[in-house]
Length: 112
Length: 349
Image (cartoon, rainbow over all chains, first blue to last red; front, side):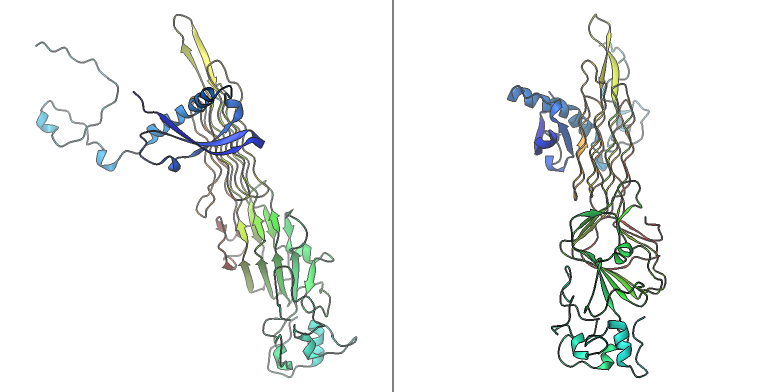
């Protein structure tokens, strides 16, 4: 389950048919005020109902919030040690190992 | 030339030659050189008030010949009257009829400013133009090499801005690249002043660089399989770059064109205002955002590049300068700090 996306309209400019909005995900590590402001043209929004309007703002913001997630810095404390080439658990104790979120190899079958 | 320094007797005719006669056609009354005298004019000019004939000349009370040693005619260049303007030169304005006021009002503006104190009074908005960082809103222009001093006095209503750069346009849907942002330009351009040793700016208003526009965001297009049907090409366009702050205001870049199927069109970048740069233009789905205009402070050097996705983001425009000078050091600045970077040994235009 992915967290909700938050948005906050910062300004509205009917003359230029634009508004400025900040986005972040609900569990962002910082206040939404600290995130960048984006200009959105009215032409990208659906004013047919409030739900449609919010959904159209969401559709603009989802890739922005995703990018924020990907751009988040790695804490110094979370930086991993060098790769460990060992099957001895003792070699892993106290070390931080970084692995891809997705599986990269087929697991070997283990007979119980 | 200014009146000689002390060391030998000073005659009334020397005072008259510098400041003009103030009693009949050729007479001199020392008392009338005090700014409290009813015959004294141009003591309140633009944002400047209670101006003496020259620094150190008494305004009231006793006045004597020795008060005039080393004194010089003060001439005010008018950038306080009229409305907002762009791209002006102080030396050009000096040469225009009605472009100056002589403090005291007992003589007319000399053709040459050699030995004179020139005060450029700005108390209105002056903007620049885009076309390069070196384009300045207010240039000092060309002066006689022996001009005693050139001082720029900016009143509280004086605002000198470099022009804001436009944002770059977003990239097209088929992984098109964003276009580059435009450079901002500069506020004050101080040319070479020959032997003049005094160069001062008293800033009670605002001196601000023009900031660069952000680059356009890259477009994004890709074929995606949709069930048993064949693949479809979905294309989103990049957002426009935000414009830079300054006057004239920069305009935000347009989004790219060429949206296809489930892709979406990006948004335009935000327009700039005199004092704030425009925001990033949001990209279409998975496409790049346009970079924001240069952040208004003294450390930023350019706007933000557009985001690269399928297509490359455009490069942001560089910021202009609050002050460009051809000299090796900046003029003395008092009052409010300038907003934006500065540069010496340059070639302001």
